[in-house]
Length: 467
Image (cartoon, rainbow, N blue to C red; front, side, top):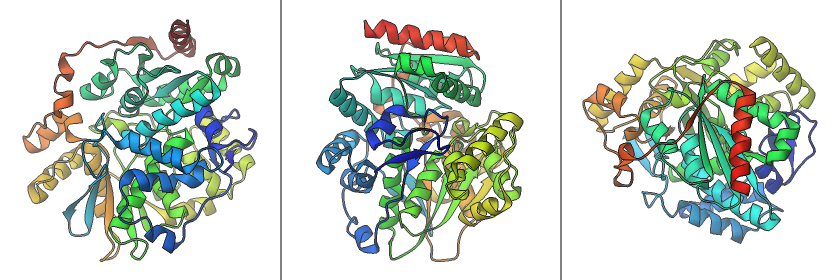
């Protein structure tokens, strides 16, 4: 399997090289040169498999030529061994034909663990094989950072620097990052929004001398391996509900477009996902695009669902590339104009194609609280704000009767206790392994939204650890 950049000016790579590179040198994102497809019989053969084995089989085509199946299976087994539920990603029925796919049973209580725990093992394997060292830089709106830190802490060949927007994550999210005192971990609180953090990370990758000096790599969903590792849980859920002999729909609360893109990839591989629903909060760029071809940046507004407080959805570039018939010149030009004007000029034909695949629904903070309250009242289900947005979006765009809807339950309610308590009167406790989180020492550095300051911090951290 070879990978190409959405902007067409970077050399093609294999899976291992894409894993280490993260972002392409031309600023584009990597995608498979061609899409693997499973037949109905091949999907049926995956039914009933334990999650680690299913994940290895679904990911195998993406790693073909870079990892043998037995090695990949060993990694998936180790990655998911420590999850807090034997099913890894259990399905919970909320109401008739509506199911929560619980993706928060990993060590940091968020869906990012589903991919990140595997990425830690992938990095270890590839770096040991090559005798190399990397510096991982990532931007987080709340969950990616803690998942990356937990997956990569204390690994000998990896330094990690995570940027988060100062004061714009929940306290639990922040402490899950800043209380990890491993010497290879460094947290930067940037005085700005998540989009500012994301732009700083992209700028570091686009600074070729700095990128080479630091051997930069990425764990954000700009890294294709993250997307590939998220595809299996949609397969797992769909098969449990009757696929490929029964279609399903999927509703995903999303800001950076990576999680719902993974569902689209599963569909592209032949899984019968009939409808893809995007749930958004007040930062509704994706739903505005689907409603009126309005992909315009309007500024990030804080909300009860901070992991979705995003205006520039990086992974949309991957879908755009597909909508533009894989034309890298058109993709690069569209992204350049978006950066220059804050508005993405998507051709009407491409936009109309997107609206046949995706439906969008934005949910206010007030409606989010009401949905949390309703879920608990009617189904005794305690949902975090992001998951509640997913269920509200699913209800707004429910397909015809008989098609089950899978809602990506992306975070444990204890990660957002204030919102859950306000809605239900119940303050969800952290699991025992995190019970002392608020008593742990924190360590992080506050920096301005300035590339020079951030690069100096990354350089100092990586050089100190490489001695």
